[in-house]
Amino acid sequence: MWDNSKDRALRERAAEVIPGGMYGHQSTALMPEDFPQFFTRAEGTRITDVDGNEYIDYMCGYGPNLLGYGHPDIARVVSEQQTRIDTATGPSPLIVDLAEAMVGMVSHADWAMFCKNGADATMMALMIARAYRGKRKVLLAKNAYHGSMPWNTPRPGGVVAEDRAHFIYFDYNDPQALTDAVKEAGDDLAGIFAAPFRHDTFADQSLPDAEYARTARRLADEHDALLVVDDVRAGFRLARDCSWETIGVRPDLSAWGKVLGNGQPISALLGNDRAREAAKSIFVTGSYWFSAVPMAAALETLRLVRESDYLEHMTQIGEALRNGLDEQAAATGFALRQTGPVTLPMILFEDDPDFSLGYGFCRAAMKRGVYMSPYHNMFINAAMTRKDIATTLEATGAAFEDIKQSRASLKPSAALAGVIDA
Image (tube, rainbow, N blue to C red; front, side, top):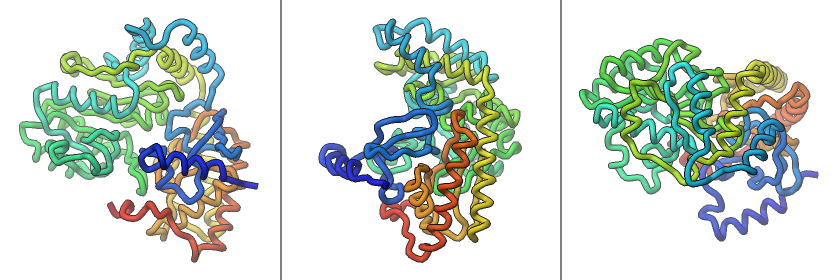
């Protein structure tokens, strides 16, 4: 029998000592009612909440779980490295090994810098783009997520107009809108930021149009600005290279994170020689940016990326999930919009303007041991098996039946007020 009494008790305690009870995307404020907040175990494809309920996890820690929670090869190198050196006065030699490994794998890269979070990497990209020619204007796609710094956070709290005074916004995948934004920047264009594909929340995903990507590259070259691909979310889930390599466009800078250490805290910024001097000119650092244990994990993760069929396997698993959900939806009279890459599934319902169907569906699946999101793209990991998909589809089949029966009474999360239309 599913129970969440311990989770509720922890939420009450957290509300007293943590603002809002929790913050960022780890908060379940935007998730369906009763979704668990606190977890005690993660292994392979599954997470276990504080009440002992186990779930097949399609959020993968919001991305870092690429190869499976607690992958034995990565756990081994982490344990071994911890006995030698981790955070110390200077980095271990692993920083050079890791930089060489990434430069050897990513076609556009001539150098690498390491940090902790995706927001660190995109902030460095912003600074380097501005340092490159001493210009200020940076182009961003509307609603694209590049982190949670004042210049890019999706929430306005604590942000002043000056934080975003030199940003110009355009429509993703629209070459003309991008061209118009470049004209608006004039002679002050520092850089163009691009997501590997459109992965906004509460919206259908869309892969990059080749003309749009080529236009971004051409405009950056014509105006001597830097092109940045933010691969923090999608890196190594679309290719064993930068994601835009699949459409034949190479950026000057690419930001990486999430999967890099398969759960260990590490991210990276990669760049070409064009941006090298600008990268040398900025000052960025962090007390834990040079820790050796996450670098050991990243080296092992990259080895498995190179040597295993993880990507092909994830693609097959993602296709099986997408096909199964389409069949179940059709059989119960629902229409789904499944968009974006199958390795980063996004599932929305047609005729669901307030997301009540999506929220009801995910809540019903959660009660049956499948953790999904009604508003954020999800993630396939390489530990998932056909058996996991079969178990998932058993739960989602019942969830479709549930929402078919209770459609009139379904409600989205109360926290959605003002978010969907924002």
